[in-house]
Image (cartoon, each protein chain N blue to C red):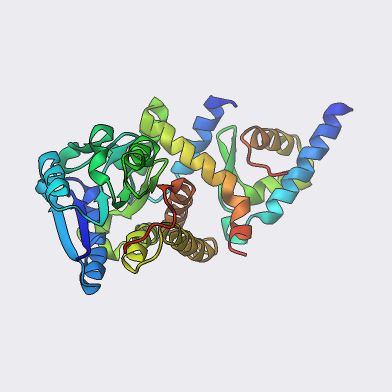
Length: 213
Length: 69
Length: 69
């Protein structure tokens, strides 16, 4: 049985957006007959996450939240995974929707047996319009950026290889850019900026031909 | 003489770069002189007019790497 | 690169962002346009990240049309 493990802290506005937008990924995995393991909200703690990774190894790990070069964070910015615990990602494909994680954490994970680690080498940005704070799915400034980053786990779930998933995200970026560069709408301009920045830093470590078997 | 040649080169670099910027993106602010903002289009006017302000702006733009070869 | 000028340019550009837009920047959190301007003034980590984003975007403007060819 193919297993998705997903973390979705929800302690600030940014993580709330990622929480809500990740629902599409969870639905897709369920529709493909996957088992879903979630560490949501206040349960996205180091103990919970590491315990789950040890007891129920996942095929695909999807971390949402904050991060830096060597750590992924969960609820209230607690470090849930770092280079010393990256061995827990052995035999997985992992995607971190967070800043900078691929730089050291990603490399460490691959050195310790992670098949492939997808992430951002720089800051992960997205804009949001204040009036959509309670309805993130309606936020037209955030939509292009979060749809593009969703494209990676959605592609992995559809049995794409890692490099195909990244290419798919890039292709969607181009599609959005082609619309946004014709717009004079200031909200679209904010989206264009973030899309461009994130696209520059999206990359992977490990085996680009890895996919969920 | 050398300075004038350099400015001419920068002007042509600017015009080449400007041509590549989509119409709807030409309202992006690319310079600030004496607290006045200038977007691509207003810089273009200065450059075509070969004004001192235009020269000043394109030097600054070049220093920031905004002009492509 | 003239850092003082760059700061001025970035702040001028940020003033053109709608006031009801925030940027979520990873672990640093959520920043409105006005908060980002403060951070750029202070030359904080967030301010430097915002400056980098603005500069990267400006450099990319002439390349977007080719990207979507």
